[in-house]
Length: 149
Image (cartoon, rainbow, N blue to C red; front, side):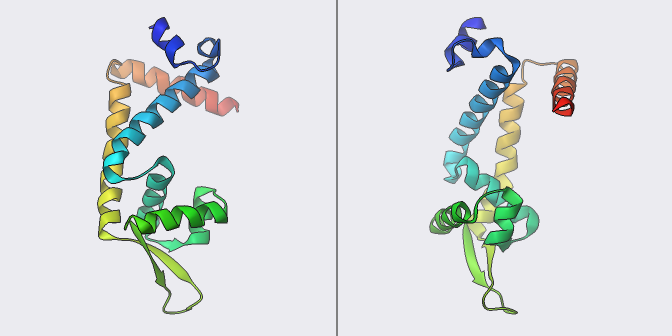
């Protein structure tokens, strides 16, 4: 166990600190989620935007940027990539032709329906050696950390 922690630590002594361990676990989970998202041709930032669009039923680029806490420039690039992959489309508003709404395509809806299962599968994989009490304790400890920040 200690050997694998040392292999995953990019900074000497990172595994000695709770923050370092949390950061390493998050990084490994993201890498596994990214690996599984390759089948949908989505990056970490992209699948999160797809879920936001699915949950909100669309919206404009500026609304999506605000909801995802991204810059408008970064959002435009992300939207361009998702559009080129056929996952979203831009649609002019009928009420105000200056407004461009974003919608998921059929491919986008398929991805939005698959993403939660992938995230759940990785979560289950990470916790497979934990019993229900361990999971409850872990959640409690993490919530305690959150409340102190």
